[in-house]
Length: 431
Image (cartoon, rainbow, N blue to C red):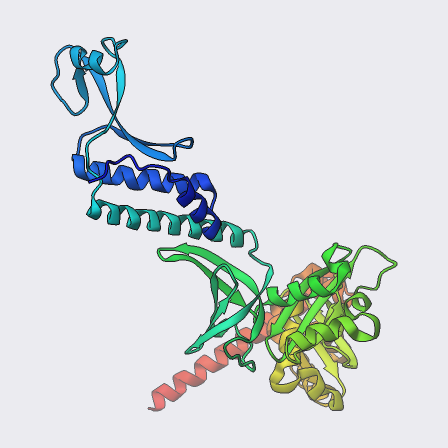
């Protein structure tokens, strides 16, 4: 039975280091831990043991440390001065001696255990290295080959490891087969028991943004900035871009000469339509741009409710809303306001109803009702809840007149409420 001292492991260490692309020192540490685990298993608990690899000889040796004492009470961690002097003639009381373990404890079973420990340690090192490498690439576009498709999940071979493309991160219209090349953004990575788990995405806003960074140098170097993104993967996307350089057209930079840049991105996304919009701090201006090629007749912004009312001609209504409401929905997401799209004919009917309701307020005539409506007061409730100073400024009247209008609206609502309660009481008494 061979000793625990194994002769010249350097060739083995070098080969493992090369094959697994792991630093030699990490392989050495794995071997030291494996041999140490065997020594502890065979010698039992209670010993103070250390393993040490000698590069010159390629050997791993086990050392047992004991303290030199006058009265030995624990032979596993203590040694008498007499015994210590036999091992080291210069030993004195209180010294800690490192005694080489020469016992034949490295047998066939132990060798198998050592192999398992080494394999486990090397796997852990590999997993850690892969995690560190790809964690630095989080948010980047990676390329790989489809290894297999399991139910709705795609397994992608990235060379050093595999990643998954879940169904919810796929573009619904795309299909892939084994050995197809695929590009996606590395959206997440986390270490799990079986190793690092890499999650890819082609459906995220991040993937679209990274594609633009790849194809548009001005975005990559920061000259042009993508401010906001709204996306319906596989159908349509809207991106708002801006620049601080007045000599650069941010939209033109993204489109490219003869549309070559945007076409490259559209091809990667299998025909997904992309609207590139100049960003604006002005909500009304931004909304008009976000609706893409729609002729807007009138637009009103309500900052309190974060609602923008857009009036378009009847023949532009379908275009403004888009197929299944997609255009208005994406525009709304992009600008961060609720968009209320109305046709001129419908708005005309709405205007009449609003005027009629506002004129029911005592002391409100035709001109006042029109002024109220034009300034966003479209119901009796909105007038009753108004601030007197703001109302006075909006419709150009003095504060006394504004307060009178507000009080009249409140009194009218109270009357309606009282009439309704009386009606309900009469109905109850009848029953």
